[in-house]
Image (tube, rainbow over all chains, first blue to last red; front, side, top):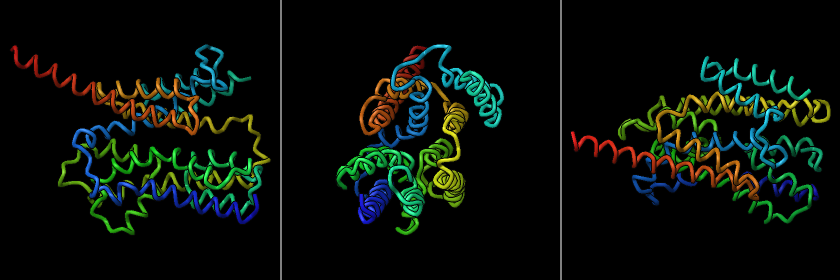
Amino acid sequence: MSDFEIWSVIIALTLITILMRSSFLMLGDYFPLPERVQHGLRYAPVCALVALVTPELFLTQGALDVSLANPKLIAGIAAAVVTLMTRSMIAAMAIGMLLFTVLRT
Amino acid sequence: MVKVGLTTTQAIAMTLLVFSGTVQLASLPLIAADAPLWVVMLTALVVNLRFVIFSAGLHPFFRRFSIARRWLLSYFMVDMSFAMFLSRFADAPRDQRGTTEQVWFFLGMSAGSWMVWQTMSIIGIVLAAEVPAQWGLEFTAILALIAITLPLIVGRPALVGAVTAGVIAVVAAGLPLKLGLLVAVVAGIAAAMSAEIMLERRAKNVGGTT
C-alpha cells in the first residue's frame, strides 16, 4: 500500500471505531431498548471478558487442547485458583507467568 | 505493525487514534495483503460490533452529557473500562445515573488502561525487533483478565452467562472476523437472562406454596 493509502486506512479505522463506540451514547434516546434487554446488558461485561480469555486458554493453534501439556491452560487455572483464594491480581499474574514459563521449557 | 509496511509514525498514529487492539490486529494482515479500503472498513465494522453493545449499556448513565463529552467517553470505551464500570454501577437507581463519581470512575479506569496500552504499544512498535516473541509477554494480559473477571461473577445468572460465553467463545473461535467473540457475548447474555427468569419463577412458586 502507498503512504497515502495507509493514512486513509488509519483515518477510516479511527472514524469507524469512534462512531461505533459512540453509537448508543449519541442516538440511544431515539432507539429506546426494551427494559429486559437493558437489564440483560449488565451481564455483558462478564461475558465479554470470559469470552476473551477462554479461547486463549483452551485452544492451541486453533485446536481444542485440554491436557496437562497445555501450559496456558494450566497457568490459567492456577491464576484462577490464586485469584479466588487471595483476590490478589499481582499474585495471580506472578504464579501464572511462572508456571507458564516453567511448563514451556 | 512496522513489519507489514507501516512507518513508525503511522504505526504510532494508528494506536493513538484508533485505540482498539482488535481493530489494529484485524486490519494489519489486510494492509499487508494490500486489501481494498472497503474490505478493511468492513472488517473493522464487524470486529467493533461489541462496542455497540457496550455503548447501549453505558447509554443510561451518560445520556445527559454534552455531545463533546460523549465523544470523549466513547473514545475511551474499551472492554476493561466498560466491564469495571457496569459491574460496579449496574444496580444504581434510575435517578442516580450519570453522577460525577461515575464519570470519574469511568475516566479513571480508562485513563489507566489508555496509558498502559499506549505505552506498551509504542514500546512494542519501537522495539519490535528486540523483544523476543518467545517470552510470551502477551500472556500476562490474559492472566490479568482472569484476575479481574472472576470476582465479577456474582450470582447464579452471571455464572450461567459466564460459562455459556466461555464455552461458545471456544467453539466459535474459528469464525472469521472475531465474530466468535460477539456470538459468545450475545449467547452469554441470553443465557444469564434466561437463568434469571427461571430463578425468579422458582422463587415465586416456592413463595406461593408456603
